[in-house]
Length: 193
Image 1 (cartoon, rainbow, N blue to C red):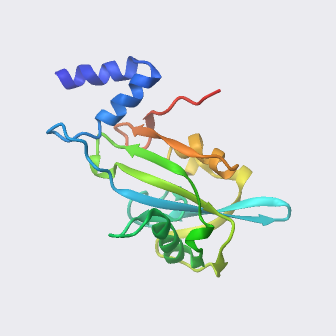
Image 2 (cartoon, rainbow, N blue to C red):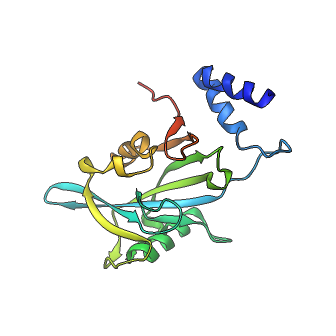
Image 3 (cartoon, one colour):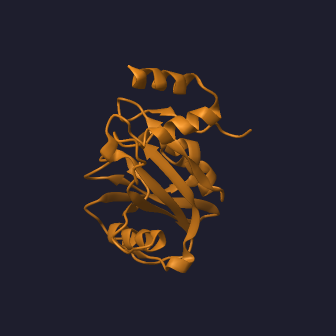
């Protein structure tokens, strides 16, 4: 009963309390802070006909299947976040990027209190300098989108809240808590006006 009362207080509290409640959801049953899995994602940007395009892909299998996402994935042991972004990009797209060409744009935390195994922290990168040829992948069906026409309705619910800023040169941060349906953000940072 105490846990339910605490959750109710979190939803009704001010923004600063809301953030601390989100952090509490990452605690184990013993009250210790859990370390969330780390992933890296990289948004490639290019200029075409005076317009900026971003490379995205529809997830073909695994976590997030069916959603449009940026190329990326889990860090391997001993790997830095930038190394993971470059490796995943090569594996999923065929494009090569040097870690020095990656622009770190921040970290976004995703919490799934109704399916803890899905909770993770995502390190966000962009790059305009890359080489190689686009190749088909069994992970993603790739497509270039004009940055003004990103299909947010086909992406995870949080993307529309932070990705436009990243694509415009800004930073990403915040904790997004997903509800029971595992598809809808029920708690997010309040945007600064």
